[in-house]
Length: 345
Image (tube, rainbow, N blue to C red; front, side, top):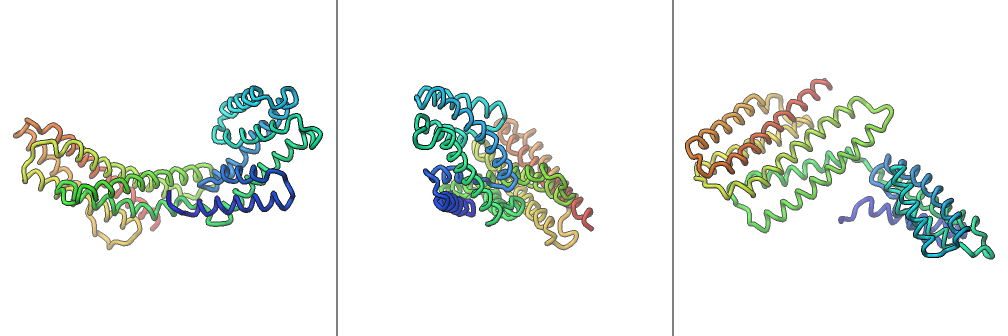
């Protein structure tokens, strides 16, 4: 885990929840801090949805805990039974993410059972419930006021970082020039970054689909980002199949040159397509028709080699097919980008 805005905001939310709880002289303010930790979400939409869902399940959990404590006190079996009941209800309501914090509420409320001489069970339950609300509200406010999550912008920035790693690995995977340890580290970093931008895309898609009045331009960006992610994933798949099949197949310097040269062309075209999206290239700097012909020529060459050297070429054909598909996905991305620019002219 790296230090980022979410880490900082979690600490701020915990501090704020503890400060408010102490200011109003609530007992056990640590419950508010726990709620703040659970409630910190990676997007504004998820923060709001989480707040509403927690409000419902925590209310339900507090009521059940209060009833359970009234009838069974704080017997361990009773606490466990109520927890099971609450989990089943959360699952039934399709609010799985709220289970953890709701169980905290249940246990905290049932802990007070039998202490009526101090607070009264209902007063204690209200106290704990308000602490949970303080924690959730603190996290929600911090999340929207300080460094609010912007998955679209984060995706746009990280896509170039992922491509720089992918480009390096694709350009050198056939020639096998990079040290094995360096290659492994770079590939692991790329795989982690690819998963990260996939998560950012899902957040952006989720927010956009839940907005009542999403802009047309945002919807178009969503289409392009999805295609970018698919193309990047296909490039990563090329690295996997090369590692699994290519070096275990009989090959000659001629075959190495064919594969290496074509991957170089595809990588450059992929880079041009990303730059074209940002309107950084001169007109006609890339030719998708030429690239389509090169992709077809590559596959024709490999098929010819397969016909003349069938023995041992089956695994090589798997690699060639995935590389061809990578080129096809770049061409489709390029067409989507062209359509995007025509729509903004």
